[in-house]
Image (cartoon, rainbow, N blue to C red; front, side, top):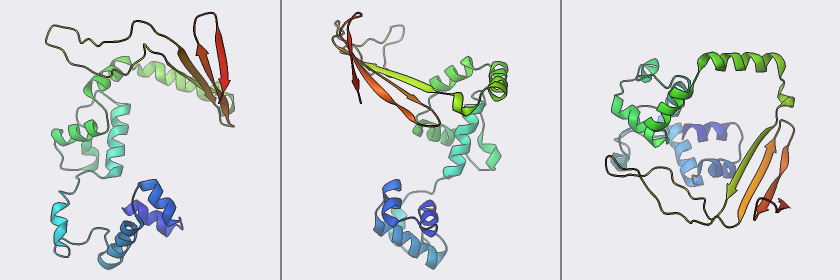
Length: 204
């Protein structure tokens, strides 16, 4: 809410602000009126009884949550990262915030196991010394066929492997390759591959 008022004070168009944050203009102007009358986008509890159904205020704001995730990304092995903001917060609250952001213990453990700080520092030093941004082109490929499916996590009894049913025949395979540089995005190409020998390209 504070961020919407900041953009409004900076001259942004209300329609654009509402599209960015997914709110209505009525809410935007109500928050501005609350801030002008009470110094906060949320009026006092005694001013609006319906505020009782709003829920308990969050311990960590958006900046705290961003710093929390940044610290986790930089040092996944840390167990306690909220002390930097001197906030009275428990492990359960930290866990809930991390879980709501889609970060699981399995992903954190994998990231911690795959990190090598010495190699990362060597790579950064080499990039800064020998590479400029205009030389970098990032590429990505995605593909889909009848055999491809989304299977993030699954469950199985203890001692057994999780299984999932899938088609035996792959069928037609679609692959798309795109590239991005500091100057422009290269035109992605969509490839329809029926076998290892034949393929056709479709420009998007």
